[in-house]
Length: 205
Image (cartoon, rainbow, N blue to C red; front, side, top):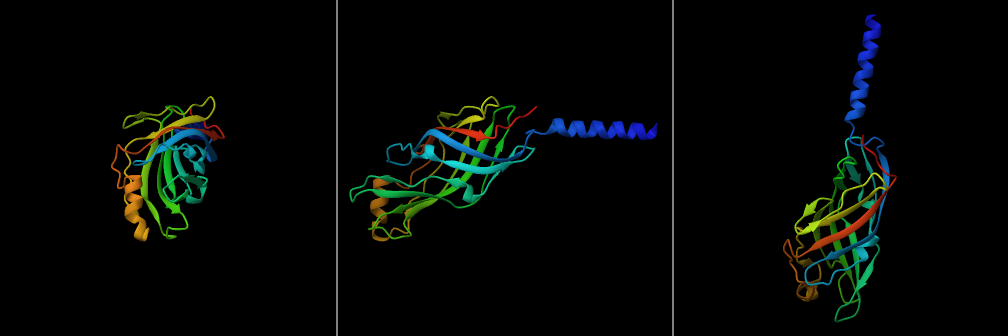
């Protein structure tokens, strides 16, 4: 009888722990984006941020871990008085975040540097760090869209990150800052409508 009670108690504990999990099917994921715009300083909004892909993992408590190598934005060009300048996003550190399939709340905190590549610019020329927390909730004047267990989609925003002055640009530092409008305070930079899909779809219960 005592053994039966112990087995029953153990089963109840295991069941309770299972119910307490935020994510029922934790594991690795790929998060691919297909829409969204990024605005920095005086620059026009750019849609290339929608090509962002993220490879990471989420545990049973909804904690998201993203290795720096798993954050990829393809290079793109922006116009300038001296011709196109190639923009390259480089993750400075591993990213972290959260995912709650039941409430739809999701976040991702990233630290990035923007490399500016042109024959006239030093190899060290860039802007950063840029630290931003993307969210499916409201941030500044922008509202995200909650994660959906129906199709694994979520729409992230951020309206409150700062962008520092350029560095490592040598003689052209002042020109870069003037053209881009740096340093650029919070409220003058934003990510909006960053719509992505998780593969696989994560569930909560």
